[in-house]
Image 1 (cartoon, rainbow over the protein chains, first blue to last red):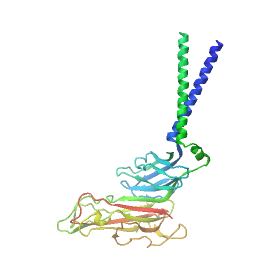
Image 2: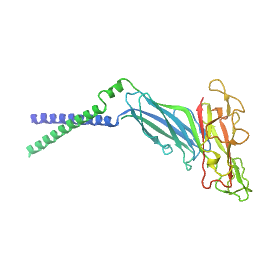
Image 3: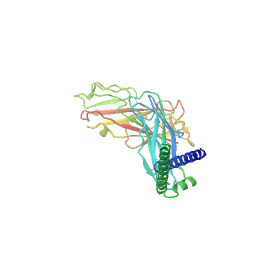
Image 4: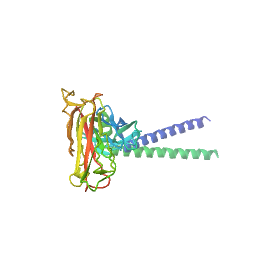
Length: 142
Length: 220
């Protein structure tokens, strides 16, 4: 009886070790293929109204005011000093995201910077309102 | 029966151990081969950084069917039809076009004074075609003193003539031209009108014509 209990405990320990090994392996695989060195989450906002207006503030990607059918753009500068080229990838969210086409992914060498234009293209059917969302810039290993 | 269960359990356990070893070995090899040894650690230890900066530059693209004169045609007896955003629409020359009473409004919606450039993506001949077409703009302060001269630092100085292309219509420029050296950010002095005028020759292009005006503001 005592022997069986000990065997069960040993089995349980083995199962735990196996689960840990599989988890570590999965995490390593994940990092190998999808490693994100860094990610920046930037707020985006546009107000659809009867006038068009700049907003050059740099706290977030503020497109200012846009008339339906027009487009407003902001420029961000992306750079890094990691030791190898990284893949720059973008994601968007929020109710502004249907107005903002995502920039294409690109590779960026260390020490170099690249300007990326982010545009809010407001459709002529858009309701006059405030639209908000987020742009996430991922620096991924290649 | 009990022995069979124990055998099955042992077999499952052996399979699990083998699988775990295989996955961990495989992933370790992949990880180190892809990260070229120590680079991922180096990246973390050296505190390399990635940066994203938002520039203080903003641009606006106005699509010029926004000032919507609609569709129409030049009368048979006329050489051209001239329209502008201040109500010009002569029925002796133009038929079916919509009379427009308001042009574009450009506002400095931010907290910083900006320098503004304006350009068009096409000229009169590219936009309208035909013989002697016109495509012109005219600017005005909608709210007084919206555009001034550059002062000390980022300040604007009152100057009624700082805004370019005031008073009379001028041909649009296809390369960026400075229209305002210091466009104020403070309400209620932050609004400029852009009026537009076109002359459509009788032999102009037909179909939907479109032009884009781009205003670029750079914080000063």
